Image (tube, rainbow, N blue to C red; front, side, top):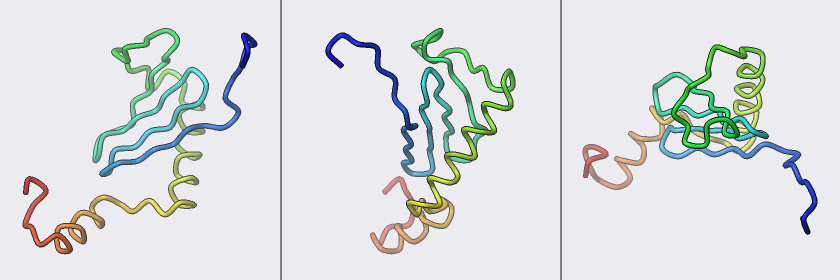
Length: 97
């Protein structure tokens, strides 16, 4: 680091309660549970107000493939399957408590 240019070589992935994202370089692909993917150029739009999905389908498809491969590798469960199991384990009827 020490004042030198640095760029992440591998993407960052995350998933939480069915919401998902991948960050690679200046692009961040995000999805709320059961919603379409959104793509943001974080260099041009740091506040992520302008969804640029559909403007670069090759990039989007590549990021989605990488996310899906990561999710399969680490065992991300489909939220529609995971939530009922969690609710039963916790002894509650819905996610609102």
